[in-house]
Amino acid sequence: MPFMIGASPIRRTLGYLKAGRLTLLDQIQIFSINYNTHGDHHKGTREFVFWNLPQVQYKNPEVQVVTFKNMTPTPFIKCYYNDGKTMLIDVDNKSKEDIMEHLIKVVGKTYEALKQESIKKQLKDNPGNFGYGCSRSCICVIPGQVPCPGVVPLPYHMRGKWRFAQKNES
Image (cartoon, rainbow, N blue to C red; front, top):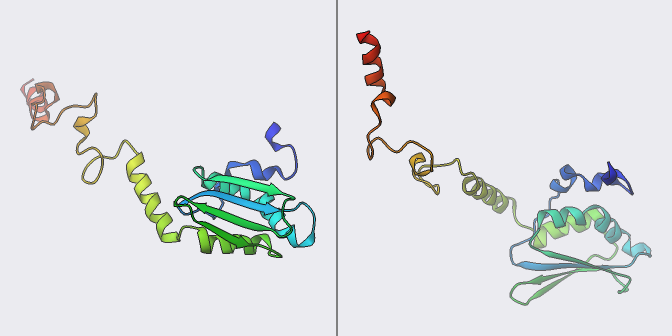
């Protein structure tokens, strides 16, 4: 498998990408990280980019993620909102775990919001769901299904009463 070649190939597996904990707010359009490839106070940011940035990109496909290397004396993260505002987050001398916890607290969605979104997505995405609160009120509106007996009478061979009466006569 060619995708298992390179430094830490576990980062390319689907299970690892889905295990990310940071889902950004809907208002965030651009997520930029500025850090250097050398220096001790950039170490946590480098590790965050190496280990956690692919998870952030996977969990937030509508957000543009940008990294700037060797352009700043101190590492920082900048979030651009859709109304033009920006948020600057200082990550100088922080470990990758501290950075992740701070980002979850400041620009991440809450657990309750994620739970509600998953319930909404589950109800809307499954075309097999029908009934009250779903996109289809009855299964008879799906092409290829038998229409409702209240609207169009069923053929005699599909009626249990008629079928059992035929068996009893013979």
